[in-house]
Length: 217
Ligand code: DX5
Ligand code: ZN
Image: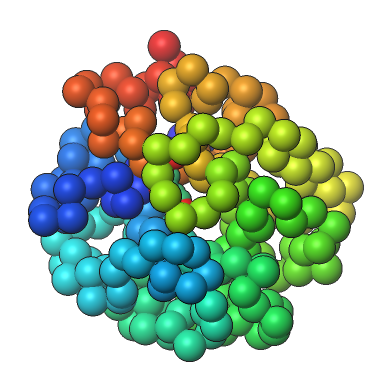
C-alpha cells in the first residue's frame, strides 16, 4: 500500500543485521534498504553483497539495494546473484546508465537510478523509460541522521509531471532525513517510497512510526 516504507540498515546495529531485518518485518514496513558505500563515491564504507545473500535466506522482505559506489557496473551483478530485488545506482557514477539498467532489468529485478541533491532531473530525462525506480536523494549521500534538504522535493514534483506526460511508470523514492514530521510534504510532492534510517531505528514504537510515515495517524 502506498507509500512503501523502506527502513535503511545503515542506521541499524551492524553487529546484528538479522535482528534489524526482523524489526522491519515486525513493524510492517515493506522493504529493507541496503546502503552500499565504497569510501570513494561517498566518504563512508558499509558492506558488500555477502550481507544481502546471508540475510536473503532469513527474510521475504523486498531487499532494496542502493549502491553509492564508483563503477556500479562492477558490483551490481554480485547483488543480483545475492538475491536483491531492487538495485539502484547513481547517475553520477555511471557513464553507461542505460546498459546497467538493462542488465538489472534483464535479471528480473527492478532497476533504479539515483541522483544527489545538486543533480537535476534534466540530467536523467533520457534514462527514465529504462528505470523502474528513481531515487531522489534529499541529503548528501554517505551518512544517516542528516537534515532533509527540502528543495529536493521540487525534483519529485517534476518527476511526477514527466511521468504523467510521457506515460511512464517508474516509482519515486525519497532518501535522506525522512521522519514523521516531514512525511506529509514528501507524500504531497509525490513520493511512492520513503526510505528512513535514523527515524526508524531510533523509534521505540516502530509500528507507530510506519503508520505515521504512511500518513495514517
Ligand atoms: C544516506 C543513505 C540513506 C540513509 C538515510 O546516504 O542513502 O539511506 O540511511 O538515513 P536517514 O533517514 O537517517 O537520513
Ligand atoms: Zn539509501
